[in-house]
Length: 96
Image 1 (cartoon, rainbow, N blue to C red):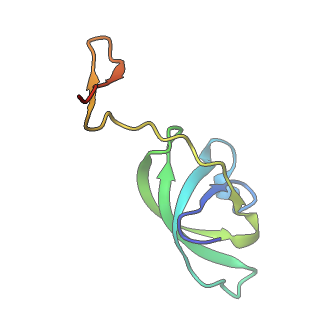
Image 2 (image 1 turned 90 degrees about the horizontal axis):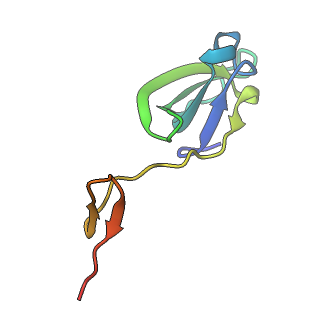
């Protein structure tokens, strides 16, 4: 596990993450494994269903309970060269 990985933090990490308290997190850093039964500090960003970071958190979890999660699809904003029509659809502008 390294910085940038997306992990699922659920009940295998700690009982406090059961049910709707489970979360998906993009790891910023992982502390050294604490000699207390393999627990470790994980710092990172909680992601919503679209993959947008909603909060920065530092969590104390069982390292063996961390699971790699699928990376959520990030919905991007229209970029340069794109224009948004009145219906909200993005259309590529043509360069001539």
